[in-house]
Length: 187
Ligand code: PAN
Ligand code: ZN
Image 1: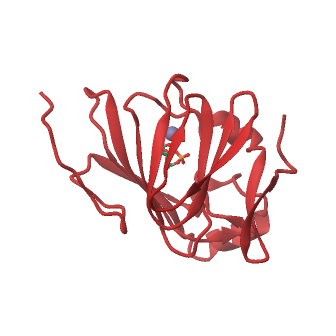
Image 2: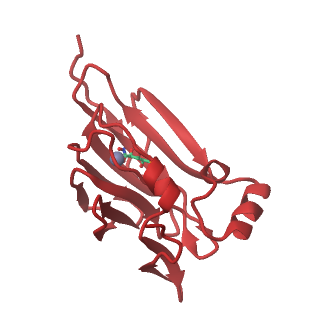
């Protein structure tokens, strides 16, 4: 039987105690995500930095799961460090992203191609409706830490975003983040 629990989440480090698992993505695990291939290869060759870590509190017998994503600051060319981005396999499942520290942009894209952004900063809990692809982007100079919360069996569908990209990119222009059309987006 699952028992109630109080799980400590540190909003600065993103640690989850106790947690049930975690994984880390280095930049080299994210081939194909960034348009500046030369900048990408140079960073991977030069220490292959940690891009983000996901720590979860997830039990298969529970309908709910939550955890943190901890994103390093950085850029590949003019694109900020980002997550892969995905739809959920179960299309009826939404999610929340509650930012704890740092700043970023949550980029969302509906199944029929509408695009939205939601600011990520402490105090903002982003609502991700069912069947909107979501990618978080660390536009700050510190870690971006957020708590996510979704159905345990929502599942991740990465294929479409990986193959086609997203319609928008978040790039640095004059020291500021700017959302632009992705010239390489494949319809
Ligand atoms: C999050 C994401 C996490 C990493 O837990 O999975 O931020 O992003 P990618 O999975 O897109 O690389 C979530 O949205 N779960 O559903
Ligand atoms: Zn998700």
